[in-house]
Every structure is written in C-alpha cells, then in structure tokens.
Length: 449
Image (cartoon, rainbow, N blue to C red; front, side, top):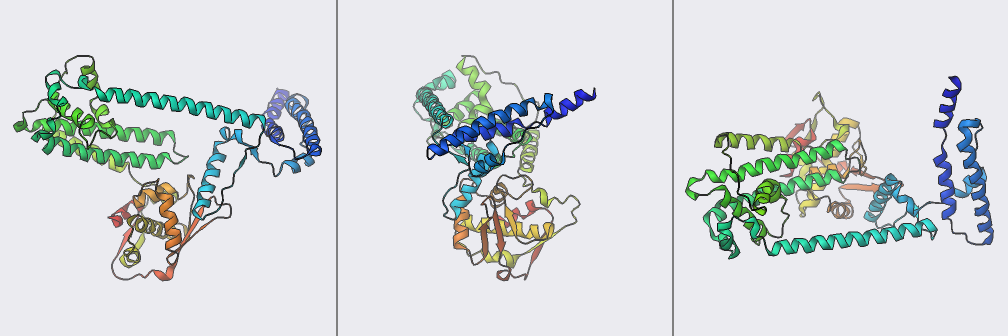
C-alpha cells in the first residue's frame, strides 16, 4: 500500500505540462542563422529526453530537471500565438495592460509571439475559416429576418390584418395614449437591465451564479412587463380585447418607425406563446386572471423592487455588515466638480472621489487602485455602475479625465500597466457646510442625480 501511495504522490507531483511548454516554445522559434537553428534543434532533442524521464518518474522515482542553459535561452522567448486559446487569463491580462497603455498613448506590447511557425500558421488558417463561417451564418440570419419583416401578417389576428397592412392603427387613441407610451417606458427599463448585465458580464470573474441572476432579472422584468401591458385592458372605455392589444404591440415592433428598428426581445418574451399560436393558425386562449387589478399593481411593484435590489454595487473590501463604519462626505467636497461641463466626466470624477473616501475609511488610504476584472478589487464595472456611464464609453471618458483634470486628481499606471492608481489632491477639497454620512456605497447614488 505504501508503494502505491508513493507512486500516486510522484505521479501527481509530475509537472509534464511545464516541460512540454518549453518544447512548444522551442518549436515556435524562427532561428536568425544556421548556428541558432542547430542549437534549437539540439535543445528540442534534449527536452524530448527530459519529457520522457518526467513521464517515467512515477515508475522509476528518478526526477529529471530542465538544463539551466535551456532555461536561460527560453527566458525571453514568448509563448507562441496559438496558445492564446489555451491561456485565456493571459489574453485577458494582455488586453487589460494594452487598454491601460492606450490611455497614456503608449505602444501595445504582446505576451504571445506571432512567429511564422507551423502551429501559428495553422491557427491563423483556422481563425480565417471560422470567421468566414460566422459571417455566412450572420448573413443568412439577416436575410431570414428581412424576409420575415416583409410579411408579418401571420402575427396578426385575421380580422385586423388589412388594417395593419395600411398602417392606420398608429392614429388610434388606445395606441397613442396608452400602449405606445407604456412600451417606451418598458423599453427604457429593458435597456437599463441590459446595460447593467453587460457591465457585469464584461468581468472575467462573472460567475455562473451571477449569470443566473442576470437571467432571473430578465424573467422578472418580462413577467411584470406583460402584466402592465395586460392591465391596459382594464380601461373599459377603450373596448380592447387581448387579440387586439397584441395586434397593437406587433404593429409597434414591426411597423412603427419608433420601434421597428429595435430589439424585439420584449415582444417575443412577453407574448411568444401567443404569437406561436397565431403562426400555427390557432386561436388565443384567454384565461381570466385570478388577481384583481389592485393585486396585479401590487405584484408589479414588488417585482420591480426585487429587480432594483439586484442592481446594487458590491465591493467586497467595503463590506460593512455591522454598519459600524461611516463615510462622511461634505457638499463642499463634491462642489469641486459642479462646474465640469461634461456630465460623464463629472460623474466619473465624483465616483472616483467617493470611492477614495470609502477606501480611506475601510483601508486607511486615500489613494486606491483600479484593477480591471479582478476579484476582491475595485474595478471598471464598479466605476460604470456608480457613475451610471456606459462601459463602452468608459476608456474615452477616463482618458479625458486623466488629461483634462490633472489639477484635481493624479491617475497613473502601475509599472506593468496592469492597474491604474488614483489619488486626489487633498488641498483642492474643503470640508465646510452640510455633510452626510454613509455606511453603504449604494447610498451615494443620490449624489449623481
């Protein structure tokens, strides 16, 4: 039994991957001259023997080491390009560092080497072929959508088809006063949820639990969106039935110029089963709700509150369950930013300053670091949520803040550009007049209205 255990221990401690990676690097080298070519070939042969011995280590108990000469040669050799598809974390790190370099006008640097070796050439060939397939699929999908957009009569109830074809329903009081304004409000809510989910999805540490929460957020939204639309039927003076209400909503998303270019997720997720019935030529089954109008309004309110709770900012280093720590922010401190004309720049500066105040209370330092997509750190996602700015616009806004507001704040990269260090100039901020104390960073959102 002891021998079996020893063999298992040797086998599990056997790092064959590290040695094979060395050979992979050697095969990717494009020699400068014949002497280097001979040297690289010799190193490959030696490493092949080393790998064999490492594999046999579990049986023989004799460890093999990589020669120092080879280790020294490979020290400055980068991983080949094709290994980008193996080391995703390295790709993310490379992307983050180059995004930060771009903020400061620095040239990009790459972790992977795109030498003209066989595996890199194969990788580029595969990338090109897959891109062609993706383009073809996208083209076919767009063509199919265009064909469907030409004739959508199957989505309407039979008696209303001709009227919708003539596009006359947009003059109806039911549509202009009740349905269209509500659809605009719901579309705005949908965009807010999509924006929030997108900010979190950009984080490489976005777990499966968080992604499930994103799905739940959409499901809750579609539930109360359908209820709100169905509540329009309660306006008896409109003499609407579900069939006609659905016709109006279809008309909005496929014919109304204010909606027909937009994402139709709201329509299909709320009324997908009903539209499916129509396509199959079946009549809608309209079940009478067991809830009263007031009960439905109360349920909608509760569902909206649940979704709003899911929009909270969570920064683990500012965890304050006991509510024993308070961050005091004076109006005079934030007044420093009030004359900044651009709203996004003003809000980002406010967000940075508020986080620096929280960092001082919770971590003892007014200076803090922004580490993109890193667990247990302050990230770009936190900034975008607090400042209420689009994550796609964040790099340009931050770049403007760095160059235009040096008198207020110093924002510098770390040595390897993997993070950004932010420090406000204390002498620019006075603590006068009214102030408010906060125990949770989410309470500060009122400062951005």
